[in-house]
Length: 581
Image (tube, rainbow, N blue to C red; front, top):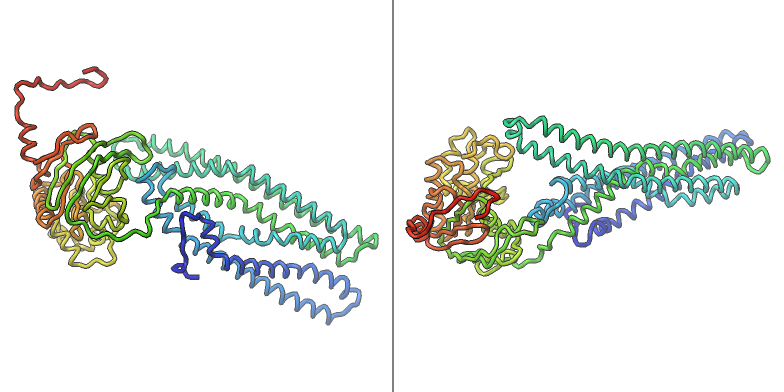
């Protein structure tokens, strides 16, 4: 069973993934059938010993029956080992088949819509499904269909033996229904609280410095403790229900086995059954009810896996179909923005609206404006991170949604305001973890960002491991390496958000030179900036306010207009918040 032979269509859901293993499940069904037939060995061994060996006092018959029983038990154990390994392999293959679309959805859907829970929930859901499939719960599901056969054999022994077995099976099935009703809600609540607990823990980890510096660790700890206590209470409720029903099932099964033995003894006394039937029926009763007992014991895991399964199906149903696209040529000439409107994922109100402008190869655009004017949001729309609610962004006439996201990313260099690097080496981060990269491409990007000398002066040079989020580097070093990553393979469109916020004078000079090189090679560069030094070597300027374009045109002309004294215009009055103008 090789994972590269498996395929998974998110539109068809996980049942399609399960169906792709139909041959393996059919094989498990056959193996389970043989196992259940071999389980009758104990009952028939006792039947033959009490009814033939003991009355006939035949030692050779006893030896022959014992050898045969040992052989059958051994074969049964071997088949159960095979079944267990098959279930583990199916679970692993299902994970391999589904992990790519699940991870893709987890990565991309937060940029399209607001998802509940913390970011790692889909991976935990997939682990839950795999864990259940690899456990002993599915084995019980394969054994349950054989219960009628065991009960039928009990009826062959004696009518009242069959009635007793049937009654016990009905009672245990009622316990399964109770487990379903009583555990569904507590498990769902516990899973939701676990997601909230994980999200808070991750937020605390990301903001550990601020938490420590501002002395809010105790309050955050108390908040986490409160959520954790609620999670533990919900988990305890689910465990209490499952544990109680499991204990009742085990006690009931033991009582039924003993009761079956007593019933058999009564029938022997009355001369309606033999001693072998008495012993065999008791053993058969235990085997007939064992799958239900196991199901009750594993019901919590089954309910959890089913809920995880449902969440994954809902997640994948929201994943847009991005396959089968025609590969477009690399953009080389123009960027156009037509009446673009943007809103945060899952929100209804516009952050940016009615933005329209056009740039051609070699243009450099600076974007300025007050805080919360929509500058960074506009860059997200240009990069294809957020999909426009209305309007269009085009590269060489093709709307961004016509591109495969991974292919589009090869033509865009993006430096976000909050620089994030990945655990790994400097070379891996600059190359965007490209498996086909070369040293020449990495060094070329570093030289374009003028960070090569900085890197080679580090202890391990390009092989320096930077830690999680680049924690081993200073803020300025992270920003300059992120700039080199944005320039890797000379992308046509380069989008930089506050690229000089952590740079010194030398870093700002290197940034200005990098902007000039981008334009000289025929690329387009757009820089969001608060500091005027970031606008060097740019020829166009766009001023934003209240999420709209206020002015767009040649930089020098706009700056002249903005800084020119307006003698007939009264000075602006700063109005405190809440007052009328």
